[in-house]
Image (tube, helix red, strand yellow):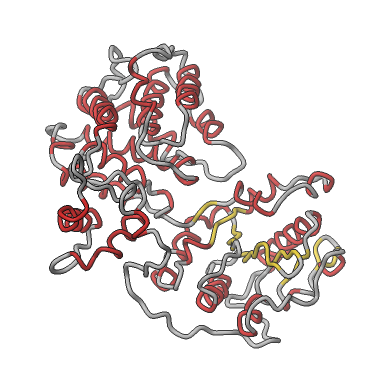
Amino acid sequence: MARRPENEILYKALKDYLKLCVIEDRSLLWPEKRIWTSENILEVKRRMIDSPMFGADLSFEDKLQKQMERAQPELWGLICDTYYVYFLPSLHITLERKQHDIGWAAGQGGLVPPPLNDSLWDAQRSGFTRTGQKYHFKYAQFWLILLFALHGKGLKDRNTLIASPQETQKALDNILEAIPVGIDRANDMRHAILYMVHPDQYEPSISTRDKQKIIETFKKYIVGPIPSDLDEAIRMIRKALSPQYDKVDRPFDFYSDLMEMWKTGKVKPLVESVVGPVTVPEEEEAVSAVHEAPAEATEHTKIQWLLLKLGNDMGLDVWVAKNDRSREYASQKFSSLPRFKTEIPLTFDEASNRTIKLIDVVWLKGNEIKAAFEIESTTSIYSGLLRLADLIAMQPNITIPLYLVAPDDRRAKVFEEVTRPVFSKLPRPMSQICKYISFSSLYKRIPADSAVIKYLRPDFLDELAESCDVAE
């Protein structure tokens, strides 16, 4: 069993939330207030989920403030309770930050949060897992918490939502499946809720990928077919390993006791596949999978120029796709940039280098490639992906940051294409390597003053980019 004595306070806190808020319609922070009604949840859903705001130009709180403009105090109270649940799993976020953010939300609604010495905050002093970048974006986790509560409101007997692990998991999985874009599905919060509600049946992990690695490492201990359900497979593994690895005073822990065994980096993907032959373009071939309309070509060229000039002003060498060398934007030729390269360093083998030469924009520092960009403004979002797929297939250990740059209204299409089975079965899945950058993020976040740009580092792009990995 994965129950930990030190986490009992977390289990109680989440069950208090479910009892007060989901089953009884009351608030966790203000139990005397009846704010978790179906009507209030639907109103917050209309503002946050039905009218989402994406992009890195505003923080989560800035976006939330716009979405909740002129909202009644009880709606902000509902947001505060949601913050409270969101913060429970995290070992990474400090108590001070948790109290600050909840206090900020309370202040937006003219509410006074519980005093800092209130016992309600005790559960926020611990957490059970470290949380990463995707978790800290918040919006997907908030969506799941709200939709899970709304689902509970619709049940004839709300207690059935948490009466059994099967019912809780089924509800969460159905909610996530109904969210159209995979990157918007809070699988990490799904894992967290299941563990905190049913700690005897689920592991203290919020990572789908960690669960897959555990199964891949220990699957030989499963008698019979491996269940498709990750949690069921891990329960079978735990049962098989317990006699050998349980401690005298507690069950073994996959993280503190066995992590070195399954986190070696040598584990093969859970789904075995053979990548077929890749297509390497000829040296002088001008690749264009879809003919661009003039307007699309102009937008593509503008983004290409922005990325080239940005890299140049940052003090990096820049490369443009071999077939785009003669292009210009606003009467400025690409080749006029001082750090424009006419030859790509021979970093990889000949076939890989031929593929790299046709990537839209590449940033370099000496012989090292610092970032590569494919710009997709056409309807297919496919030609650039194929080039990147070829590169990943030929160089499975590649560590170059790869970015797909596309219009804001193509965001869903980008994630849909990146997570196609053909790209998921590469030696390293495309979604784990590539990130998405919207056109609007580039326009808004690139400083106009080149004196500022020269102090930037290539990793500042992570502030603009969204991970395409739904399991992150």
